[in-house]
Length: 446
Ligand SMILES: *Cc1c(COP(=O)(O)O)cnc(C)c1O
Image (cartoon, helix red, strand yellow):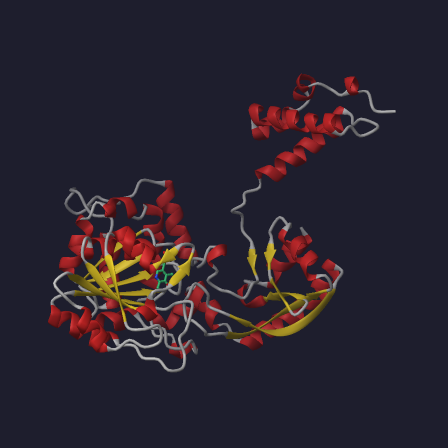
């Protein structure tokens, strides 16, 4: 016999008993949750019907679930350090503190404390950017995509930009060089071929309507084999002779030479400036290890033009990120201690044997907590975000089995979700980005 729905407590009665929930979530939210829960019970009535206490307990759980932010912290054990979908760089504590300070109180964002007059928000970072890159001037926007957009629009609207076919890249998330050109109002003049572009390809393409030459870091792919590209230095000469600008989009870019950390040959921003680019664009939250931002450094007159572009206002950075970026840039003034202080570099440089030891320490505890098979395995991490394309880092992790898909779903459902990757029939947790053992144990025990 079906339960008699008339015995289900009403919304008003439940609200009268829901004082604690109302204090936490507010009356409207609790009332909505109660109605939704009652509707579910009416649609599929259990027998016997739950009492008021049980209903409120279920509503409390619904509210707790709905109140958990999708943006809450996770453990990135994918092995990709700068994972775009997982928020890229994590910031040094000092930068976090600066961002929090900027949130809590008014700041002299566009106010010159010396004169009491108006200041410029970019001034807080300009000196540092010039010092670290050797550039004459700098400006800051929302991200590197914005940097490329505003640079192209400012220098080339209604005119042509010459780009090698080997550099007409898509980074993902709808960032494609030809599309950005179009949005910037610039006509794309493709030259060369996918694998080989020569100096003469550029010189032959330059004409009356050419505004700029553009060089783009290939980021997430590599052309190997029978290839040729024109070095930035030679391209700069061609641009100078023709009286057009050279814009070099480094993508990630790095402010320091990463070779001493065994991290290949990512071009530095200073190198690109020294090689003669008129403008260089790069990201704040890739190898640089800061908050999301786009930096443009280069010739003073061109930076001034960019700052006058109305798009600048639409693409500018807020005080919170400016505060964090300033602290991160300051750390680069002391390269010796950078790896200790900058999480991105620390994670990139973390040696495999240290990670393997951590995996051995953690394996038995993880096996016990999850009740599955756990093996310590070597694996490879990658920088991610198109930085150091093709470069992998020897790492170590835990291979969880059987049924890796089910295990992955279980770990994603934790209150601190753990994200790994499925490889060779196991769920692999690459421990390179695990800050400390306790973080994993705490997430698994919750
Ligand atoms: C990543 C990248 C961009 C976009 O930078 P965002 O900071 O993600 O906006 C542009 N150009 C290149 C070459 C890149 O690698």
